[in-house]
Length: 381
Image 1: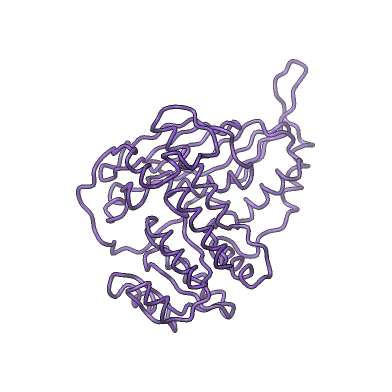
Image 2: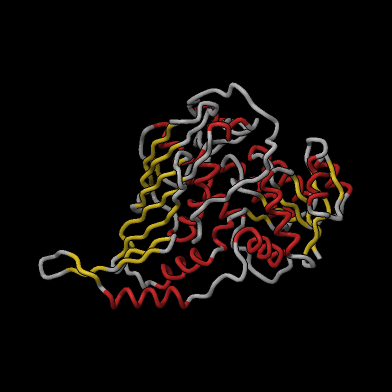
């Protein structure tokens, strides 16, 4: 049985604990830490955990025998806390975004390598049946050449979302909708289609006056992917749409197949439709989905039963793409990948100095009384 520690007792920590509790006896939550007095104890009581509460992460690492930690903290703390745990020979799974720069991601990867520990980044949407099937079909070549893709990572967050003290700041949250929300779909995009060679982008803030950061991003990734990330969208429509030689295939699931008539205009192609639908439905369903499935995969990787597919390199790739989008949005030019180690957008401190302040934070709260959160409406359906 693996002993887990939870660092950070906010809303997303509940998701981790609920998943880990359901995976007993493979694992056990033995410690919960939060620097706000009483928050860790509240979570322990809520889930009736046989665990100890801490207000100091260092004290938790020193006093508890932990095999793994889940890092559920504001993004600016991810790198330091991950490296501390890894230096204690503790395996780490960290919430998205992995870190606030490519340089910090590289530091985490090196620490995991040095200490011979597993480092994983939350990519829970990979562990959903619809996305697994989409990737398998792309890999099979059944769709033919992929001509164009559309990725819409559209969310709704009220203006008060940014009242939380660390949100909406370049130096603590690290970014707006792109880094905190678009990261989900960018991970899926890289996982399914690979890295683009270059991109052009625009970033702005239209509706969140208590945030320095962006709430709308549009970009074109130059393997012909149109990307939009937003916190403005009622209905939160989220989708990945592939237009290929044989069909349109999308998640949430949609399939369309045309063929050209003698004059070039379209008509339905029922044979190809049946062929692709049959292949899609023949692919296996995930036994578990979301955080529970990823944490189970992480446990199996730690214990040597599976090869880790959501490692630090996967997390790093997403951060590099995000930083390239920010660079293009700020400098208003095409940006080529990979980013050089001397690039201002490779490092955290130099990037933060360059980023525009769309607004300044004028008020904040330490925490919200409401702990309920949503993880997206259409992701993986």
